[in-house]
Amino acid sequence: MKQYHDLVKYVLENGNEKGDRTGTGTKSVFGYQMRFDLSEGFPMVTTKKLHLKSIIYELLWFLKGDTNTKYLTENGVRIWNEWADENGDLGPVYGHQWRNWASEDIDQIKEVIQTLKNNPNSRRMLVSAWNPSVLPDTSKSFSENVANGKAALPPCHAFFQFYVADGKLSCQLYQRSADIFLGVPFNIASYALFTMMMAQVCGYQPGDFIHTFGDAHIYNNHLEQLELQLSRDIRPLPKMILNPEIKDIFDFKFEDFTLVDYNPHPHIKGVVAV
Ligand code: FFO
Image 1 (cartoon, rainbow, N blue to C red):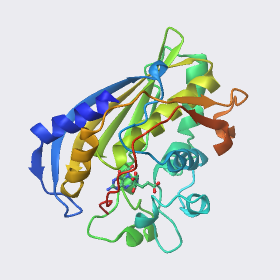
Image 2: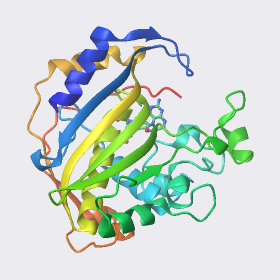
Image 3: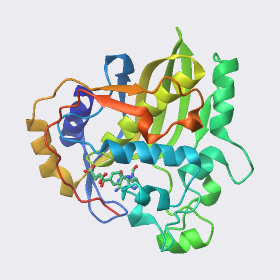
């Protein structure tokens, strides 16, 4: 994962000192791109241990169209709790927009799969989580926004596009806001996994995952952690094996994913900006 280390170094060297919504302060750049050839291994950071279980359950949760944290917490995943209301609701976030856009019964995932199977040269294979009509009012709390039918948080990974060539499926994500220490390693692994799953159910080999950023930032309280991480040697990438029997994207279960040869350095703790 040289790509990730290059991103960290680039932001440390070129980042603007920038205040932010959470009051933490960041070093930030605008516009950056990474590319991962999925045939070279599964792009999971090796210079700190990542909690793959959270990544898999979060992706299955998006694909269910679920926007309540109950399913996540039942499976031991706490990464969305800070933003949910007292009932676990987050409002119309990712899962809702992917599977039931604007509550108009538009299933963007089903539609993009149809196009991937029937018209793979299409240049219209996009899924958007960015829905201006449900963006939160920043003067209100997370739960007040949810009570008003708004999303607790606007999507960070806002939209993605698929591309097929030479029998390989590639995916490009536009992420408007990227927390480089905590979020980005999750986001890379999540979309790499999603690309592999989509490739399998549509009958393609996995191609590239291209990660394009808007505001890519390092929070000031993650600087020591990243310094430690950069001092560690990068190890070979693990491999992800999907259960080959699964032919419908909505049939994947936690047990259908097997990661092999992941030998990371120890986990590094960091506080999440809320
Ligand atoms: N808020 C911030 N500040 N940064 C983010 O990346 C994000 N997210 C969503 C929404 N809000 C965000 C939540 N994603 C962790 C990882 C991803 C998150 C939120 C938190 C986290 O704390 N990771 C720890 C512990 C992992 C675990 O317990 O499973 C870690 O990786 O060490 C962006 O998508």
